[in-house]
Image 1 (tube, rainbow, N blue to C red):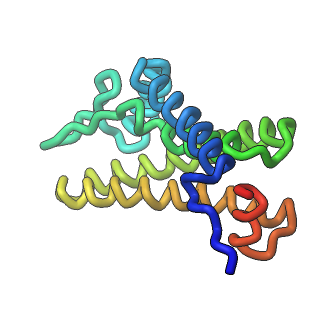
Image 2 (cartoon, rainbow, N blue to C red):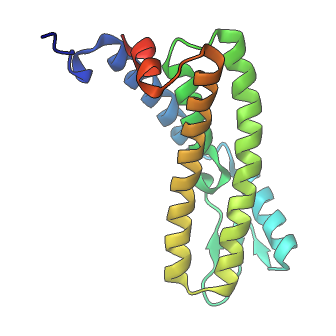
Length: 172
């Protein structure tokens, strides 16, 4: 009986993990370095105007607890997941990756604006503890949707019937 190689011993799996984490953490580093400050302020202004909330920089002046629009609220973490999946594997082809990166980034950023708008709405209408739970859950839902979109694209584009076939093609 043939035993499969443990995932950590699979050179393709290790290469994927290194590429994925490299891309993902690069996006996190860029966010923490302040490259998205302008986008943070724009998002805060958009939310402030939408809900008629005073804004100071990236701070929504909600009473009793102000909301900070941090770099990680911009959707950059979700974009990092998308790009990490795209560049983590050899498939799809480079030109296709670029198109998927551009369109995926635009869709993710638009979806993230809606996500943050909902969080602020709940922040206006619910208690802070409830909003914190909704905030965390919304990030997990967004991440799951991104992974599902990538998985669906790969299955459709390359004709894999199930995830096991796809994983075998990508990691073996």
